[in-house]
Length: 360
DNA sequence: CTCATTTGACCTAC
DNA sequence: GTAGGTCAAATGAG
Image 1 (cartoon, rainbow, N blue to C red):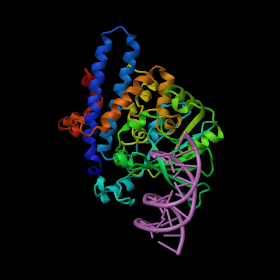
Image 2 (image 1 turned 60 degrees about the vertical axis):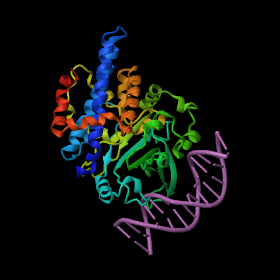
Image 3 (image 1 turned 120 degrees about the vertical axis):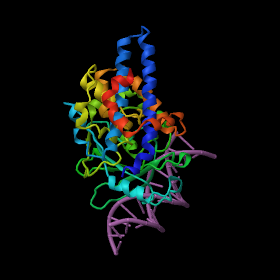
Image 4 (image 1 turned 30 degrees about the vertical axis):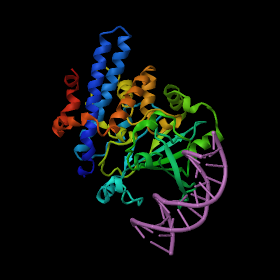
């Protein structure tokens, strides 16, 4: 199982570590200046914490994926939003087994290495159309599903051709709650995150949103802060609990990575930081940047929302960080890949608990 | 003109 | 055989 993802684990770790190093440097820079040092420090600490957790996730994933989902929101008391991601690792494993090389993904579903991230998104007021996650999707099909009231829509990454990104997702409106959408991600984005930084094109759900509510003509221009504010007040994200069998690949899509925080949160003390804001805020997914309101709904918002509540000026740093990480995660040729030689699992295992020393 | 969506047909897994 | 997933031509929007 581990073999299924170790091929990208090391680079990822390398990327994360470099990111932390960069933040450290930035931190030093800021600490020597007089530009609202407290705020900067807080932000930087949260950014660093985000990296730490990302590495923790990797560490966990390396030690046999365990269901690490339920506990995610434990640290969000009273949060109107809940989310977790569930991975259908069976699919991923299957995909790995059948994997014949990503360059030869011959359209047949079995060949595509995949995992699933299943989330349910529900908007309770005007905000509907929850389905953007910072990536740019193109609808390629729709199908009536047996026993389901509403058809299922199939999306694939618009960069499929240009960047050979084979990520797909399925969106289906919930039978019992028409405002709820079940979103199943499949495949992993291999594209750069350029699309994250650009307003994603409309999806059918967005069209519905426009038709039904149209309460924000400038959605795509809406800044993350505002978006998150809206989300916080208008959305509920309910995660769909899948079998939760094993988490073989806990770090790919944002909500998935969230799902890996679990109870070990308690072991992860960020003493200098407020629990709610810092921890959750720091967990803003590196894979996403707020592009549209929808883009935040099911993936980003829970944590960014928490962050939002905690520090209004925090999102900018995190957006920047998102960009940084996005660039890193997609830059397969990045020189920091060289770091992986120094990152054996044991080291990673120690990392989260040595963070202060690590950063020092 | 370009790109996204729609939709029926086709393919594959079960 | 059926259901789910994908393809690709037709169509529409910008």
